[in-house]
Length: 404
Image (cartoon, rainbow, N blue to C red; front, side, top):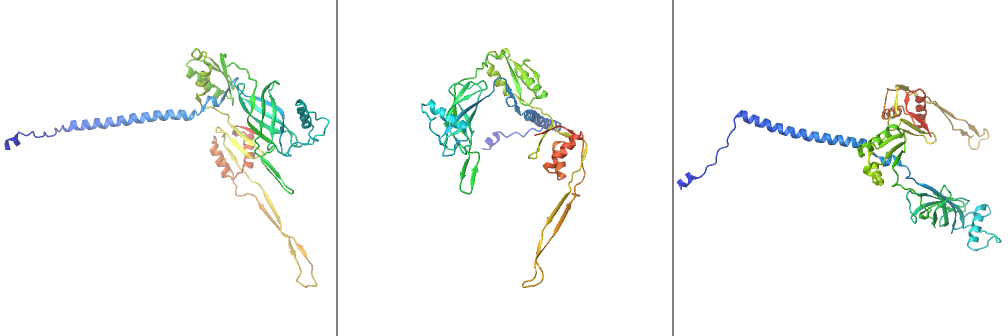
């Protein structure tokens, strides 16, 4: 047993490296870890740069341009709505309704000219619709119906067959169906309640397209993109994005609102695919520095690029408030002397807005700083409109003011 114990394999002791080699090995490990951290950080920064570019280019080309030829067409028609519960036109005052009703009955073989018509269940209406691009025969579109005479409500009415004409006078659709009216009117002996607009309604899929607008898109050798907000910088960015995607100089800027794209050989016979690829490209639209003011409602909209040179602003109004609270002076009960008299009491208050001080806006302040500065002065929307116009007159507002 002792011999067997002596023959057992004993574990070797761990080999210890010299101190210099251990230090070098530890340094190498730390450098390797640092390199990995640097590589990860570089990858994160690269991804962040990509995210930043994507964040800045947030608009697709399809959201800022219209393709020439791909457009809607407006339709209009005149018709009659029947089935109203006594809320139709008065035939005595609405002569066009009476003549239209007589004409419709004559086409159906009914002679109504010798009889006096007294119905109030019919209303003359105007029917409008929008014909989408590339609409095909037999497809349906929505229509809007609006009263033309003195009808009080179209609730429960049915539109009779109404041709819808385009700008060229041709019939492109025919409308008919029951109206869906969102508003209503309830009237009693002493009160009337009206909600919404009961004299306008809508018919979902109420018109059938009878004629198509011819447009051979596939045969085009060039396409023009029309910017919804014309701008030189935006048009140039759109052109560069298209050329970078296609790989050849296939687009050029004609004017601030138009970019012309020639169909390259790689998309020969595949114009729809080219437009699909182009409209998904992203660019960053530019815009003019503009302040839009609505005087009626006091609404102010300022663009991001609005800047102001150094200017001092003070705002204050003189307010005089006069309050009359007359009092009645009466004699004592059962008194034989004295009489009732009205004693005037007047209270006058004058507010000079002395707490409002002169404010200074530095050169090149941003939109947020401008708003904060005006709010700090306690300026309301109405006064802010006057201040902005005064700053523009002084030449310190670097933006256009558009009054609606």
